[in-house]
Image (cartoon, rainbow, N blue to C red; front, side, top):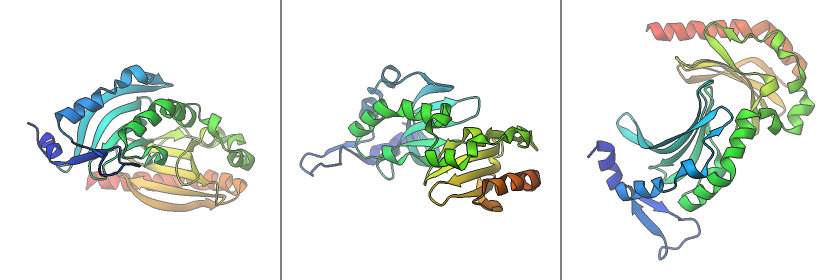
Length: 260
Protein backbone atom coordinates (compact mmCIF):
# COMPACT_ATOMS: atom_id res chain seq x y z
CA UNK A 1 0.00 0.00 0.00
CA UNK A 2 1.33 3.45 -0.96
CA UNK A 3 2.20 5.94 1.76
CA UNK A 4 -0.59 8.33 0.78
CA UNK A 5 -3.14 5.49 0.94
CA UNK A 6 -2.00 4.72 4.48
CA UNK A 7 -2.48 8.34 5.43
CA UNK A 8 -5.89 8.42 3.79
CA UNK A 9 -7.01 5.38 5.75
CA UNK A 10 -6.30 7.36 8.88
CA UNK A 11 -8.24 10.46 7.81
CA UNK A 12 -11.94 10.79 8.49
CA UNK A 13 -13.82 12.46 5.67
CA UNK A 14 -17.29 13.75 6.37
CA UNK A 15 -19.79 14.13 3.55
CA UNK A 16 -23.14 15.92 3.57
CA UNK A 17 -22.44 17.83 6.75
CA UNK A 18 -24.33 20.93 5.70
CA UNK A 19 -27.71 20.93 7.41
CA UNK A 20 -27.19 17.51 8.91
CA UNK A 21 -27.34 16.38 12.51
CA UNK A 22 -24.93 13.98 14.24
CA UNK A 23 -27.60 11.30 13.99
CA UNK A 24 -27.94 11.41 10.21
CA UNK A 25 -24.44 12.53 9.29
CA UNK A 26 -22.62 10.07 7.03
CA UNK A 27 -18.95 9.53 7.88
CA UNK A 28 -16.49 7.74 5.61
CA UNK A 29 -12.80 7.01 5.74
CA UNK A 30 -10.77 7.92 2.67
CA UNK A 31 -9.96 4.36 1.74
CA UNK A 32 -10.44 2.42 -1.47
CA UNK A 33 -14.21 2.29 -0.88
CA UNK A 34 -14.50 6.06 -0.72
CA UNK A 35 -12.26 6.53 -3.73
CA UNK A 36 -14.47 4.12 -5.65
CA UNK A 37 -17.52 6.16 -4.57
CA UNK A 38 -15.93 9.26 -6.05
CA UNK A 39 -15.03 7.42 -9.24
CA UNK A 40 -18.64 6.37 -9.66
CA UNK A 41 -19.36 10.01 -10.44
CA UNK A 42 -18.47 9.08 -14.06
CA UNK A 43 -17.40 12.60 -14.89
CA UNK A 44 -16.60 11.80 -18.52
CA UNK A 45 -20.26 11.00 -19.12
CA UNK A 46 -21.80 13.95 -17.24
CA UNK A 47 -19.30 16.71 -18.08
CA UNK A 48 -18.27 17.91 -21.55
CA UNK A 49 -14.96 16.43 -22.67
CA UNK A 50 -13.84 19.86 -23.84
CA UNK A 51 -14.79 23.47 -23.16
CA UNK A 52 -13.14 25.67 -25.75
CA UNK A 53 -9.45 24.72 -25.61
CA UNK A 54 -9.83 23.13 -22.17
CA UNK A 55 -9.71 19.33 -22.22
CA UNK A 56 -11.17 17.17 -19.44
CA UNK A 57 -8.66 14.91 -17.68
CA UNK A 58 -9.91 12.31 -15.23
CA UNK A 59 -7.42 12.04 -12.36
CA UNK A 60 -8.55 10.54 -9.02
CA UNK A 61 -5.15 10.79 -7.34
CA UNK A 62 -3.61 12.26 -4.21
CA UNK A 63 -1.21 15.18 -4.67
CA UNK A 64 1.57 15.48 -2.10
CA UNK A 65 3.90 18.33 -1.19
CA UNK A 66 6.96 17.76 0.98
CA UNK A 67 5.65 14.27 1.74
CA UNK A 68 2.29 15.54 2.96
CA UNK A 69 -1.02 15.00 1.13
CA UNK A 70 -2.41 18.40 0.11
CA UNK A 71 -5.31 17.55 -2.19
CA UNK A 72 -7.12 14.62 -3.71
CA UNK A 73 -7.62 15.61 -7.34
CA UNK A 74 -10.79 14.37 -8.99
CA UNK A 75 -10.42 15.89 -12.44
CA UNK A 76 -8.82 18.77 -14.31
CA UNK A 77 -9.80 20.88 -17.29
CA UNK A 78 -6.49 21.81 -18.92
CA UNK A 79 -5.67 24.28 -21.68
CA UNK A 80 -2.38 23.05 -23.09
CA UNK A 81 -1.93 26.16 -25.24
CA UNK A 82 -1.64 28.61 -22.35
CA UNK A 83 -1.11 26.21 -19.44
CA UNK A 84 -4.26 27.22 -17.56
CA UNK A 85 -6.14 24.64 -15.49
CA UNK A 86 -9.43 24.36 -13.63
CA UNK A 87 -9.40 21.42 -11.24
CA UNK A 88 -11.80 19.74 -8.83
CA UNK A 89 -10.25 18.73 -5.52
CA UNK A 90 -10.93 17.43 -2.05
CA UNK A 91 -8.82 19.04 0.67
CA UNK A 92 -8.04 16.37 3.30
CA UNK A 93 -7.15 18.99 5.91
CA UNK A 94 -10.27 21.17 5.70
CA UNK A 95 -12.48 18.25 4.57
CA UNK A 96 -13.96 20.38 1.80
CA UNK A 97 -14.45 20.07 -1.93
CA UNK A 98 -13.40 22.97 -4.14
CA UNK A 99 -12.74 24.15 -7.67
CA UNK A 100 -9.33 25.78 -8.09
CA UNK A 101 -8.25 27.84 -11.09
CA UNK A 102 -4.61 28.33 -12.11
CA UNK A 103 -3.96 31.01 -14.75
CA UNK A 104 -0.20 31.14 -14.30
CA UNK A 105 0.28 34.42 -12.47
CA UNK A 106 -2.52 33.60 -10.04
CA UNK A 107 -4.18 30.56 -8.52
CA UNK A 108 -7.46 30.87 -6.64
CA UNK A 109 -10.55 28.98 -5.53
CA UNK A 110 -14.02 29.65 -6.91
CA UNK A 111 -15.66 30.27 -3.55
CA UNK A 112 -19.16 29.42 -4.73
CA UNK A 113 -18.10 25.77 -5.10
CA UNK A 114 -16.51 25.29 -1.67
CA UNK A 115 -18.55 22.81 0.37
CA UNK A 116 -18.17 19.76 2.58
CA UNK A 117 -21.15 18.11 0.87
CA UNK A 118 -20.17 15.82 -1.98
CA UNK A 119 -23.73 15.68 -3.32
CA UNK A 120 -23.96 19.48 -3.39
CA UNK A 121 -20.52 19.77 -4.96
CA UNK A 122 -21.37 17.25 -7.66
CA UNK A 123 -24.63 19.01 -8.43
CA UNK A 124 -23.02 22.45 -8.69
CA UNK A 125 -20.20 21.16 -10.88
CA UNK A 126 -22.55 19.40 -13.28
CA UNK A 127 -24.89 22.37 -13.53
CA UNK A 128 -22.47 25.30 -13.61
CA UNK A 129 -18.78 24.54 -14.12
CA UNK A 130 -18.67 24.21 -17.91
CA UNK A 131 -20.55 27.48 -18.36
CA UNK A 132 -18.23 29.30 -15.95
CA UNK A 133 -15.12 27.98 -17.72
CA UNK A 134 -16.53 29.08 -21.08
CA UNK A 135 -17.62 32.53 -19.94
CA UNK A 136 -14.64 33.33 -17.69
CA UNK A 137 -11.70 31.63 -19.41
CA UNK A 138 -12.68 31.01 -23.05
CA UNK A 139 -15.00 33.74 -24.41
CA UNK A 140 -13.98 36.12 -21.67
CA UNK A 141 -15.57 39.23 -23.13
CA UNK A 142 -18.97 37.59 -22.57
CA UNK A 143 -18.46 38.15 -18.86
CA UNK A 144 -17.16 41.73 -18.88
CA UNK A 145 -18.92 43.82 -16.26
CA UNK A 146 -20.60 47.10 -17.15
CA UNK A 147 -18.04 48.88 -14.95
CA UNK A 148 -15.11 47.40 -16.90
CA UNK A 149 -16.73 48.35 -20.20
CA UNK A 150 -17.59 51.87 -19.06
CA UNK A 151 -14.01 52.31 -17.88
CA UNK A 152 -13.00 51.78 -21.50
CA UNK A 153 -10.49 49.01 -20.77
CA UNK A 154 -11.55 46.77 -23.72
CA UNK A 155 -11.53 49.66 -26.21
CA UNK A 156 -7.89 50.80 -26.22
CA UNK A 157 -5.62 49.60 -29.05
CA UNK A 158 -3.30 47.84 -26.62
CA UNK A 159 -1.48 45.75 -29.23
CA UNK A 160 0.26 48.89 -30.47
CA UNK A 161 2.51 48.97 -27.40
CA UNK A 162 2.12 45.64 -25.57
CA UNK A 163 4.49 43.07 -27.11
CA UNK A 164 3.40 39.44 -27.29
CA UNK A 165 6.82 38.22 -26.10
CA UNK A 166 9.60 39.93 -24.18
CA UNK A 167 12.64 38.68 -22.23
CA UNK A 168 11.25 35.14 -22.12
CA UNK A 169 7.84 36.32 -20.87
CA UNK A 170 4.77 35.48 -22.88
CA UNK A 171 1.70 37.71 -22.88
CA UNK A 172 -1.12 35.44 -21.69
CA UNK A 173 -3.68 38.15 -20.96
CA UNK A 174 -4.30 41.50 -22.59
CA UNK A 175 -6.86 44.15 -21.55
CA UNK A 176 -9.20 43.52 -24.49
CA UNK A 177 -9.47 39.93 -23.24
CA UNK A 178 -9.34 40.43 -19.47
CA UNK A 179 -9.98 37.59 -17.01
CA UNK A 180 -12.38 37.78 -14.08
CA UNK A 181 -10.50 36.73 -10.94
CA UNK A 182 -11.31 37.29 -7.26
CA UNK A 183 -12.14 40.13 -4.85
CA UNK A 184 -14.03 42.12 -7.45
CA UNK A 185 -11.06 42.30 -9.81
CA UNK A 186 -10.10 41.49 -13.37
CA UNK A 187 -6.61 40.54 -14.49
CA UNK A 188 -6.17 42.77 -17.52
CA UNK A 189 -2.55 42.00 -18.40
CA UNK A 190 -0.18 39.13 -17.71
CA UNK A 191 3.34 38.36 -18.88
CA UNK A 192 4.47 34.95 -17.69
CA UNK A 193 7.44 32.60 -17.89
CA UNK A 194 5.93 29.22 -17.02
CA UNK A 195 9.30 27.48 -16.67
CA UNK A 196 10.34 29.73 -13.78
CA UNK A 197 6.86 30.77 -12.58
CA UNK A 198 7.89 34.40 -12.96
CA UNK A 199 6.19 37.39 -14.50
CA UNK A 200 4.04 40.48 -14.19
CA UNK A 201 0.28 40.85 -13.82
CA UNK A 202 -1.88 43.97 -13.89
CA UNK A 203 -5.32 44.05 -12.28
CA UNK A 204 -8.32 46.37 -12.20
CA UNK A 205 -10.51 46.41 -9.09
CA UNK A 206 -14.12 47.29 -9.83
CA UNK A 207 -15.00 48.39 -6.30
CA UNK A 208 -11.99 50.65 -5.73
CA UNK A 209 -11.81 51.78 -9.35
CA UNK A 210 -8.04 51.41 -9.48
CA UNK A 211 -5.29 49.57 -11.32
CA UNK A 212 -2.55 47.71 -9.47
CA UNK A 213 0.21 45.28 -10.42
CA UNK A 214 2.11 42.33 -8.99
CA UNK A 215 5.35 40.66 -9.98
CA UNK A 216 6.47 37.12 -9.26
CA UNK A 217 9.90 35.52 -9.31
CA UNK A 218 9.79 31.75 -8.85
CA UNK A 219 6.18 32.31 -7.73
CA UNK A 220 7.22 34.66 -4.91
CA UNK A 221 4.95 37.74 -5.11
CA UNK A 222 5.70 41.41 -4.67
CA UNK A 223 3.65 44.49 -5.48
CA UNK A 224 4.73 46.78 -8.31
CA UNK A 225 3.71 50.42 -7.92
CA UNK A 226 4.70 51.70 -11.37
CA UNK A 227 1.15 51.27 -12.65
CA UNK A 228 -0.87 52.40 -9.63
CA UNK A 229 -3.58 54.74 -10.92
CA UNK A 230 -7.32 55.10 -11.36
CA UNK A 231 -7.00 56.78 -14.76
CA UNK A 232 -6.99 54.70 -17.93
CA UNK A 233 -5.06 57.43 -19.77
CA UNK A 234 -2.41 57.46 -17.05
CA UNK A 235 -2.21 53.67 -17.22
CA UNK A 236 -1.56 53.80 -20.96
CA UNK A 237 1.25 56.30 -20.43
CA UNK A 238 2.75 54.26 -17.58
CA UNK A 239 2.72 51.06 -19.63
CA UNK A 240 4.34 52.77 -22.61
CA UNK A 241 7.06 54.18 -20.38
CA UNK A 242 7.59 51.53 -17.70
CA UNK A 243 6.40 48.12 -18.94
CA UNK A 244 9.64 47.03 -20.60
CA UNK A 245 11.90 48.37 -17.81
CA UNK A 246 9.80 46.55 -15.20
CA UNK A 247 9.97 43.32 -17.22
CA UNK A 248 13.74 43.82 -17.53
CA UNK A 249 13.98 44.06 -13.74
CA UNK A 250 11.90 40.91 -13.25
CA UNK A 251 13.98 39.07 -15.85
CA UNK A 252 17.20 40.08 -14.08
CA UNK A 253 15.89 38.86 -10.73
CA UNK A 254 14.64 35.66 -12.34
CA UNK A 255 18.01 34.97 -13.93
CA UNK A 256 19.80 35.76 -10.68
CA UNK A 257 17.58 33.32 -8.78
CA UNK A 258 18.28 30.63 -11.36
CA UNK A 259 22.03 31.08 -11.01
CA UNK A 260 22.05 30.83 -7.22
